[in-house]
Image 1 (cartoon, rainbow, N blue to C red):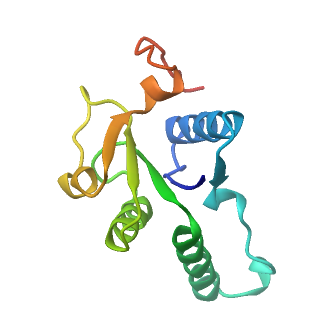
Image 2 (cartoon, rainbow, N blue to C red):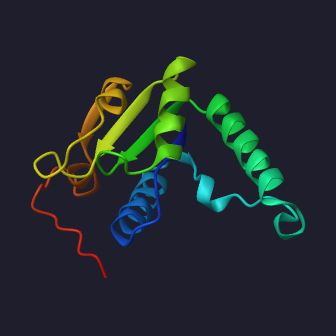
Length: 138
């Protein structure tokens, strides 16, 4: 199964969970497309606008080619790009599986939550159901 993993990676906690998720997905044999790992050739030699268009095109292609889109959701307004990827996948009929950071302490966008096939705790997924796992930001 080929999975597109949509996630913000701008804050320490987001980066840590993103990396743990990638590692686990690959350990269990999933073919995961990680946008962060894909570089645009000659990126330093083109304008930011052109670079952005190329990233957009590559991400669209990857979503179109995947079987499912998995989304790491860190709360309301955590990342507009991630929200867009989720909405695009939903719009073209791809199954969307959403992993939320913490139901008890965060508010989530109704559009993001309702635009997916399943919603579950990322901590429980990473810990195989042990909700006592704590991710400490370094």
